Structures are given as C-alpha cells and as structure tokens.
Image (tube, rainbow, N blue to C red; front, side, top):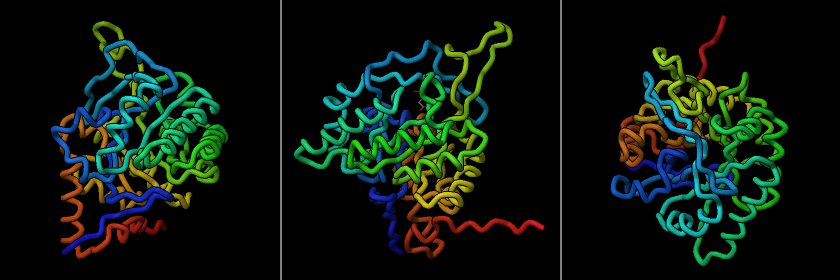
Length: 313
Ligand code: SIN
C-alpha cells in the first residue's frame, strides 16, 4: 500500500514528517556517509549566532540514564561563515533545510533573519526553506530568557517575520511551568510552527570530587529519558494552539514517531539518537510508511492529533 507522507507546517511543505534536530547532525557533511539526505523530511543544522562563539568549557557532554546532558554553549563559527561555507552545501541536499538561529537581542535575531532572507533573494537556486528560532538553549545566558517569557518570545517572532519572508518556527523550552502561553504568544505573533521541546536543564555530579561533571556545571538533558515529558508538552500545546507542532524529545523508533504524531505533532525531529545510530533518521522514514501501511492508513496526516484522552470522572 502506498502511503502519502507529505505534511505542511504553515508555509513549509515537507516530503515527510521526519527531520533531524539542531545540534545532533552537525552541518550535515559529517553525516553524508550514513544518511541518504533525500529521504528525510528536513535537516536542521547546528544553531548559528551573529558572531563566532567558542562555547562552554569541557567536559561538555555526559551520559546519563536513558539520555545525555550537553553544555556545548552554542559553539559555532557565526553567521558570516555559515552563509559562505555551510549554506551552499545544505541548500543542495535535496531535502528541506531549516536554518536554526540564536541571538542575545530581538534586534540581533531580526538582523540574522534578514541576512538569511537576503541570501535567498540573491541565490540562483532555492536555498533555505525555513528559519527555526532557538529561543530555548539552556546553556548560554541571554538565550533561555526569550523562551521563558511569552512577550519576549512573541517580540522575537514578530521581528523575524518582519525582516524575512521565510517560514518561521519557534523552538521552545520545557524549562517553564507551562509552555502553552508561550506557544500561544509565538503563534499569535506569526510563527508558522512551534518546535518542542528543547532540552531539560539538568546536572551530573562527581560526588568524590564534590564537583559538577560538566564544565559549565549545568546542561541540557536529552534522549529517551525525556520522551514522556516531551509527549506531555506536545499534547498539551496541541490543544492550546492552532499552528502545527514539531515534536522533539527522545525519538528513536517508529513507534516514538507515531506517538508524537497522534499526540498532536505534525512532524518530528530526531535528536540524540543520531549520536548512537547516525542512520536512524532515514530508517525511520521507511519504517513510518511501513507501519502506517500495515494499519491501513494511506496518509500520514490522517493520524496527526488523533489521540483521545480518557474521560476523567
Ligand atoms: C548548546 O549548544 O549548548 C545546545 C543548544 C541548545 O540546547 O539549544
């Protein structure tokens, strides 16, 4: 049975709902030996900032039960280098390319988005398909505040919408009491979609040394350990906003993908699983079509948001 896997996230059309998450796929070159990029719904490379950043002191990662903590600190070469060296490669991979940006101020976000938009206008072939706003990195001061405050998140989305024509995805943090007001504000400000969740802030301790293990003391928890939290947030946000949701958090199997879709996500991003199984994303696309076919479902969109909650007495 042939299964239609295409999904629409506002103005962004994807051939299927399986993307790879920022920070877990490098700038794609590193993964070329493992993944047929043309099979994927899209690629989100590592976050780019206005200027180069050296990132946080090592150690920057530590394995935890069912997951990992990272405190990379947005190590990257800055937007000039990104536009010159990574964008030409990323825009020719035969799949959607979603640039992920972070900045310290609303103005910086808008300027970066403007640079991406300008690049598209000048390019002789379709280039960047959307921009994902990293409003949620827990590892740099000044980054997390946007995603923890509805007004500031909305302000950034609005400014980015005004400065470029690209579809806008707001990537939100789970490190708040309730993500829903922030997702609602981002949607109202013009986000085409929201992606959630980024990592949960956490810590690992070397008790003998009486020290934190990570050089930056705290880090962001990702991997299978956070999947139940991510599912809960996707489900709650799906009932609160009309914009499409991209689910992220511990996705490693076809069942994981489908759990997020029925909970209300229109697409997913595979993150930490790329580190221990670099070809997992393309395997999931094949498996998704097979699983839907076995269920007699001919379009992936037919399962999105189909979860029915239990009646509570
Ligand atoms: C990092 O570079 O510290 C991780 C990025 C993120 O969590 O958004």
